[in-house]
Amino acid sequence: MRKVTWYGVSLSSELRYWVGFNKTKGIGPVRLRALVEHFGSVQTAWAASPAALRAANILDDRSLYSLLHTRPTLDLDTELRKLDALHIRVLTLDDTDYPAALRKIMDAPPVLYVRGTLLEADQLAIAVVGTRRATTYGKATSHAIVSALANQGITIVSGLAYGIDAVAHQAALEAGGRTIAVLPCGLDTIYPPEHKALAQRICEQGALVSENPLGEDAERIHFVPRNRIISGLCAGVVVVEAGEKSGSLITADLALDQGRDVFAVPGNIQSQASQGTNRLIQNGAKVVLSAADVLDELNIASHPVRPRPRATSGVAIEEPSRTAMDVDAMIEVDDATEAALLRLLATEPRHLDDLALAVNVPIGKVAAALSTLTLKGLVTEIGVREYARSTSP
Image 1 (cartoon, rainbow, N blue to C red):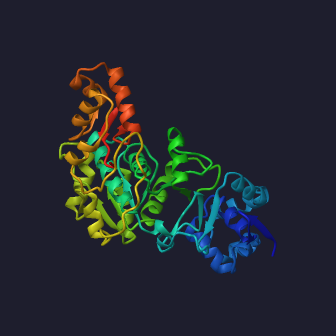
Image 2: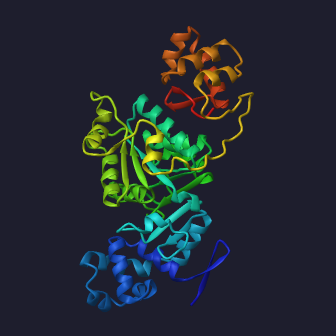
């Protein structure tokens, strides 16, 4: 059998046919698995005659038509070269590097595209998801929970979306932890496009993954299947904020179907952003008031703490058990504005405009001070012009 080179490793040419089926509309995990079982190999299934495919009685007329018209037009070697040029690895269910937890779900993706790295440590993962229209409370809560989980060596999984997802990825990165983003499109496209820089950082401290082939856009039909991968990669799912019809609730339902734990952060009963999470709690989801609730439930509270990045700019790092007052006494700040901002942010997140009014300093100077504090690792921007005290120091 002909071999192809993949990152310096010789692999059987069957990888080509996995990619070929993945590029064929109408053939999902269940049908592809049935085809491979019926014909004995993915290569034999790809080359099967129209009569043999009809006799197998696996494909309906539409998917059969799709396969018969895709095969002669698709250059499989070219597809592999495109993937290689983009540093995207292809994993199939038979690969030892395929995520063990994901392999066990009923409709595991037969093909998984990976940009970045998947490590054995990623088997200890938690998904953190929520609304795209996150409130300041939701962003700050997500950041605090994720920071603590990442500092315990937990890999954070989410969907790279606006709102809670983006905050979860950012918080994991800032804590020096690992994070995985599951995309509803091919990995040659970043969705949403505004998160390209964030996606690149994720590749450096984790991975982007997708079951969708190159060239596939982020269409509505891809979002629910994407959510099953988010939950499938994890031991549990934490929903921070979600409206009554949020996609995050679908992720929670999928997690339950997969035997995963579902956690929810309670919120203001008058806030639309907390209607879904409060309902989850009412229906039996485990309440999360801090990362400790997740760690305790999963019996991983004693997991070794991930070493923290050493601070610069004169910021002293001490054990996380120190109180806020202890840390304040050790922080070196450049002027009174920075000190005043830190005191204001010690209790809750604040908007830039509110901070400028509170300290009675021109907004430009306040923005500059916040930038300096962010570089020092003392403050985190959790939304547009919204700032919170960092949980890392």
